[in-house]
Length: 474
Ligand SMILES: [Zn+2]
Image 1 (cartoon, protein in one colour):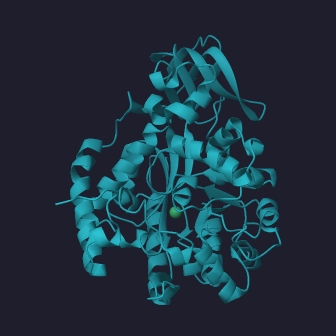
Image 2 (cartoon, helix red, strand yellow):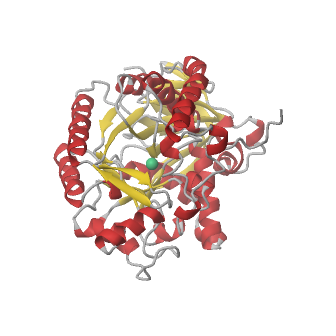
Image 3 (cartoon, helix red, strand yellow):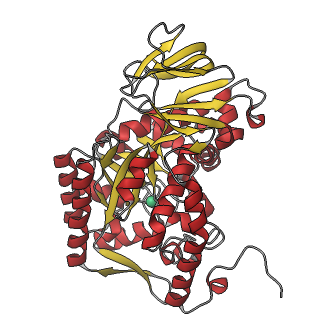
């Protein structure tokens, strides 16, 4: 087995007695099976030696919620629009307008995975629709990918008055569920050891309660996670109140769809949130006692003026919250920065959360949500998912606290090399297994095609649907 040794790393974030700690000038040795050594003077086998001077060595980040399917095409389109009648969210009226066609799927996925890798992500949970390249590109990336094929029984529709309505088609939902499970069968047959399936009913409001309960049964029998969007917007929670007389978490508790296998995206509109109509403030305790996980993706919601109240409060209540990037940008380090800033702004308290807590969320808590205590930390026996950050990068200097430099200032600009399962997958900021240039060559045309489809669906020019940021005078 081939052993890589990072010699005399200037800074290392290692796992010690249940927490991440800094260490200086030590070696990190690993092979394909796992981490062999995080300490001084590795004396064993060394097939590849890496100079660790001027490097921060840290565990790979764990992204528990992102979408490769259509979101890469949404860049530049909907950042300044929302539906005023639906609390300002762009999701129902705008995001659903842009779909990638079959020719664009692989390019979208390639760009998402390469952006994530560049921001230090080694594990990600991708909620998307199946396509012929999905498993192949995921495997080629060299990353650990949790493939979550979404399925649902209803589609969203906006009434002329901008009310959120639902087109139910249970037969189509059953067919989509069957198709998703067949994807999971294919994933289960993967031989790389890096792909895992996820049972993913798309949204709590587009699935009947018994359908959600059956999905969790399926996840438990397959021993894989389940994820579902829940409490993500006020439009959704208002509809749940109309149907069931309760919000998302209370409903999930009633129907038995909570637990350590369950990851809720995004768990924002809970019963303590000032926008909701409840004043019970019991949801956080329900999530904590059931061990249910929340995927927190602050950037996309902050763009609509929305936010979790607050990440620090969830963590203090004992809820396991991991971090996801959701839509564009697929930049985990910027997402972590925004998570801290949002948590402090929403709570009005700088002490609501700190850098150590967000790093823990983006590593260990994400790994917990995926049921993988061997990820997100560097200690002998953990998987060898390792990130090297360049401490000479101007955006990292001066270096007093490299994690703070990375999160608050440098982000992906300082990430140089990444290994997953002991294999190098990012070198000098370039993803080795992904044809990023080829994907970039396709993506402009793919976006133009998607815009044309949206224009004909709406019968409006895109400049009317979502104008560019600046006028273009004749
Ligand atoms: Zn999502």
